[in-house]
Image (tube, rainbow, N blue to C red; front, side):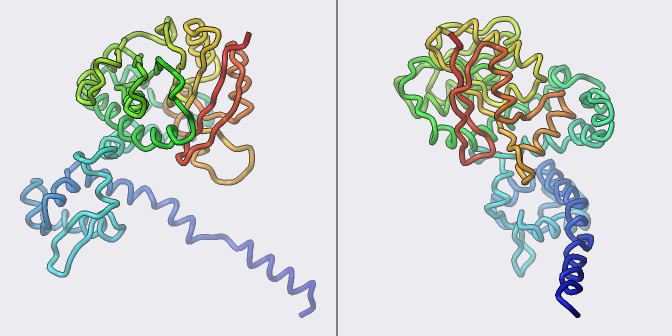
Length: 349
């Protein structure tokens, strides 16, 4: 075999279909559904109390012993649980993320993302690609924000999920941005106050405002009080399409703009711009989509926003264009240890 023939053979081998990897990708949702079932049944909390057999856990959870055994066996196989020689299941560092009693718990995130509405929405991804429109309403019967207003249980999961995820990104943001020069931070679309709580906790001389829909901030009052921040943090309900609280020298928006299309995002940004002083500063915490073809979590998160709300993750240039249209100048983008970056902007003179 000459060199040319050998090179052709090697190229052919390299181009063989990768069936194994594709099988893993397609069936990965089976593992996700097992994790959802475990969380719905409260298994991570149960095994955290002490080693339990499948039979003991079946009694505690009111489930079929044989079926639960099969679920537990699968969960142990992927490291969510551990099992000893006596058949007793215990927790693992991976499974601990699903406990409801740990800071940053992902239990509600699992229930939110793998609940019927969200999971069904992803089932209509091809329809969203065909139409260019979100498909959450087709899957759930209501537009996404109306859905949460109508389903208090899922709204509660949403609040807890965002708090849990915020715990992961807040430290990463605090590592790359210095909040100490700012006396008052207004967190627009701040949910239940998790992100602002982290900022105020790290900077005792700073005051803050959490601004979100009235029913959302109502859920955050106890959280702010429990954090000992009630004297430095005000919670205000309203719509950021209409008016944003004035008086801040730093305005933050974490995971807000990615919920909305460009037209709505410009409206939100203009509302923030009207509330800001000329020397104020804006921080947008979102993922920034790289321009190359490499994998990035932002590209998958972008699909999630597309099917849910018609929002999107954006490239650096798309952020620049968006901010410019609303009267801001993009000053820098700071990557963090999390998938999110800090997009910094100032009012354009």
